[in-house]
Image 1 (cartoon, rainbow, N blue to C red):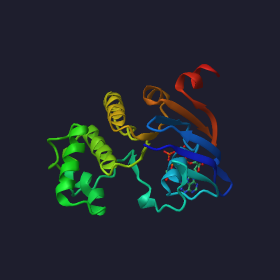
Image 2: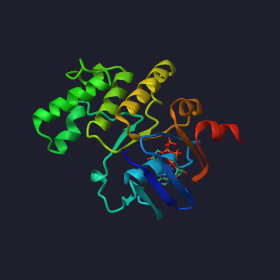
Image 3: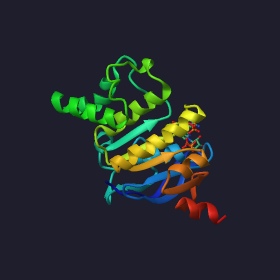
Image 4: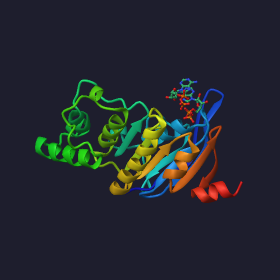
Amino acid sequence: MAVVRTEGLVKTYGATRALDDITLTFPDGGFFGLLGPSGSGKTTLLRAIAGFVIPDSGRVFIDDAPVENVPVEAREIGMVFQNYALFPNMTVAGNVGFGLEVRKVPAAERKRRVAEVLDLVQLGELGDRKPHELSGGQRQRVAMARAIVTRPRVLLLDEPLSALDKSLRVEMQIELKRIQREVGITTIFVTHDQEEALTLSDQIGILRDGRLVRHGPPREVYDNP
Ligand code: ADP
Ligand code: ADP
């Protein structure tokens, strides 16, 4: 789908170097787990890729095209956050279809694509429900559906499972991986749960104090201290 690459990204907040020279390639269609303690720069890196954070220096490329001149809404990036942030007064189908409506996709096609993606996340029967009528795991699926319905080239997940209890989280890890494989989308997944990152990721990067201290396939990262 797309290769995401950062080159020498630096972002400072006063004396804090939130990102300290991050050069990293996120492979096409892969699942990249970004690990590190709280405050290590994970969220800042995701936001820089999405365009919500403008780096002091360095650049972000998608398929070798620098994204700094691409408006945020045209970056073809889907995002899912820890708190889902669904629209509470809209139905599930309305939430999922919102991004298509914004893009002026005609109603008939919108309906078809919403139904298709709701099937993919196994919520085919629940399109008419409101978010408060769903379980936490179901809401998380809606957030995934909403992020991928516009067929973005890159999926950014910021601790999307951390609000769920342990057993549901494990179930959703399997589900997330299945969806990601099926859609084949380049995915960057932030977590501070090492086990979760190992379960899901083809490649792992570890941040500490804004620096990339280690990266590679999980086995290489953890077998060579
Ligand atoms: P986490 O550690 O769970 O990633 P944080 O509490 O570090 O979450 O950050 C939550 C939000 O607040 C983020 O959007 C981050 O950019 C912002 N933020 C973090 N630290 C500061 C700060 N010192 N001043 C202003 N905003 C901050
Ligand atoms: P993580 O996601 O790994 O918890 P963040 O990217 O949220 O880390 O934050 C990295 C560092 O940058 C932290 O020291 C945080 O306090 C700081 N920071 C992040 N966003 C802001 C902000 N908007 N204003 C000031 N400091 C921030």
